[in-house]
Image (cartoon, rainbow, N blue to C red):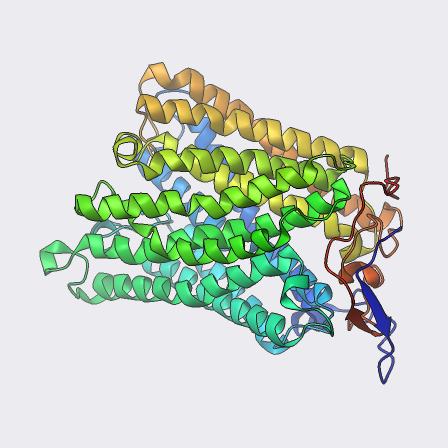
Length: 551
């Protein structure tokens, strides 16, 4: 049975036999660690805090929208709630989740490296993220922010009576953490691959993170400059975006979306990488069209810089510019479609097992496909004019970002949890969580497509009574979705002490990360791995009796 893509030779000296979990003890050793695996776990604990706060804000909004009248919170409080939800979820959960958590933990293992290229810079990235997050939380605790996560001008520079500057400073600082993470990954992938691991022997997870890192390094500085200019105008009245001061508010939108649309792919490309790993493992087949999938990741990263203008179809942008951006927006869907078709072809006639990670991967494909297809509606000028600033936009965004990215993150976390902890979680409850999440998500957000088509504007806490039935469905779905998100937290914690011992490769997966112990040694490998073949050397005829818990 083929389960490995590498042979190994001994190094000049033995590595430390203890793994990263028990080699050192105490809070200080964690706060000063340069071990990429520990830093990934630090990110995991941190983003869960932001995810929880953002989810509570979302739950309060959904309860408010149960009835047409704004009877739970005031309009000002509602503005602050969706700003809390959007800011924390986008900047402090969705963007860092897969790269900072799974990428930090897995990338050096997958390429046979001892660590990332710049371990101290890696730790600094986490501290910048913490400082930025602390400023954001301070802004929320001491009055909140009511601009929305986009900080649109001139409202954010002139009229907003809230802590805009401190919130923008938090996003600004956290952005530099993202830049350092992207730089670290690029150098690590270029310079620290194991012998024999050529570019077209890399797992797709690595290709996805390489493309993501390029976006982080090239696009994030534009966001930093934009927020700095906004702060200059708000503090000193410099006329940049406010038309009363000779500025142009549309300039802010151009700068903001030049970063923020590529940032969509920062969130979704890593999820695509995870899905490629899961589809091949649990269908026991080589990835269909490997080179096409790898190149599609790079194409998405490049084309993602060229489509920001479709966010400005209803602005003063010229109709000719709108047509160009419309065509480019349709074009960027092609590499995404290549990935979906190739995943489907990989599944065809595969020896499929529906383990928990596979269920999340299938959920990713389903939700991302719906989100991608509805994105084509928004790429069309005429349709976009009708649905702009309605719940159609909310539904589309969440199908891509939450339905796609979070399903990818959860699939990857379940897949590599035995490698991270050395323990297995209860498979039955894992499957239940995946199914509940999928059902709850669709019940939450699919009715919002109908609401948007019918004309219900987003960001309103009161609405006409004829929209109530769809809002009740969304709120009921959000309750189910909350259960789907809570279950993994419970059984992951349970598994830390009571889960079965995983062994080095419970999924019988290929890849270098499965050729070391679970958890890995402090420096990952006791011997230098040498790669001798292509990735994903699976066979559909292999035995699929996976050694996982079923209780």
